[in-house]
Image 1 (cartoon, rainbow, N blue to C red):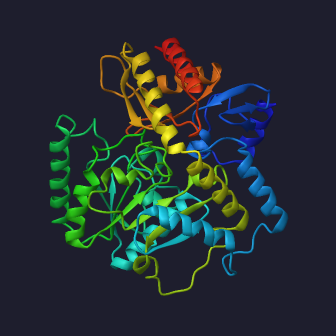
Image 2 (image 1 turned 90 degrees about the vertical axis):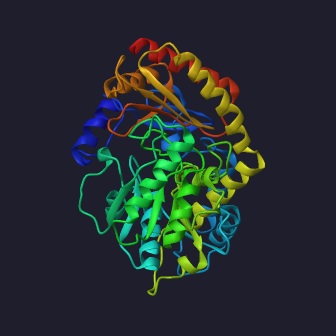
Image 3 (image 1 turned 60 degrees about the vertical axis):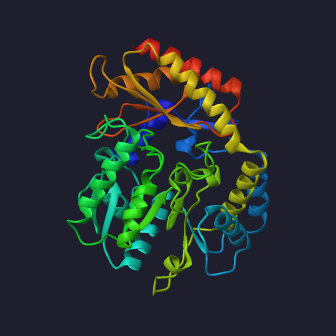
Length: 428
């Protein structure tokens, strides 16, 4: 059946629509941290629809909220007052850490980042944007234009002038050999030098932990140090929290809080996990920034009632069950387990991450070169063993991405680590 569906897929879908595995997988249903395919095979899900099924598959509280809301009204657009949208916006504004916050809902992280760029460039009257090397911010024309990852950037055309900054990747590049403090100092000086050669940009957009880039991150405090330089020039800071938000990193509710000594970002974008699979994205910004547009706007599907009901139920469950704490505890166990099982593997360059956002970078043994072939082989071997994981990376796709739902149990963490261990051994 999957082969027949794959043939149909290739006839009607674009060639550039990426699929995992030589024999692509059709997922038909899920529950908790597990999913099943069309043949009835059950898998432990350590990728959650690209970090989107954040809480659990078929979470009763979310499915009940969606069903009840769908029985009343599914959609009306933002042209009408919408109680679930206002209620979720109130909670997000309070949790954001941004003073006098305003919230605008979209349908995806791409659209959220696109909106943040619109706000920043309008507010600052500049179309120059600072972005991080190895970054990814979405699929739209403007988001592709600020994506510092060649594998996900199909065009150099852009409405923006993008300048790329050092710092998103700790263990590679010209500053990799420095101590954390010296690394931050070097990146700050690079930023100062860059700003001396250009008109003042509108904003810096940065993922606290780079998602598609392979779960790489700078030392804590880098963006706080950047903030001092940015503030001196009036440049805004946009934190792309599409993958890091809602407690996934364990130590913090938002990824930016690892860099928060100089205050919160001017703009935060979010998506993915808040809907637990429903299409929700959004932007939080100070009122003066959010309100800077001088023309009317709406969102036809952003903030629609059924997705807002899902978001409210999911956020309530996450907070009431302390899933951030669970991500810290179980994620800490999982990352140490993965470090232990890979310690003798010459093809594992680094196991990195925090909470339930863990990257395993693969290189060719005896070199520092990426090994995308082995990454694909490990992905397939893990699937054969009953585990779904993701992959990513910068210069080449050779980092395994491990990001289970935040309700992961200790037993499931141990099971997944054992399957991944077997997959690495069978491909080494």
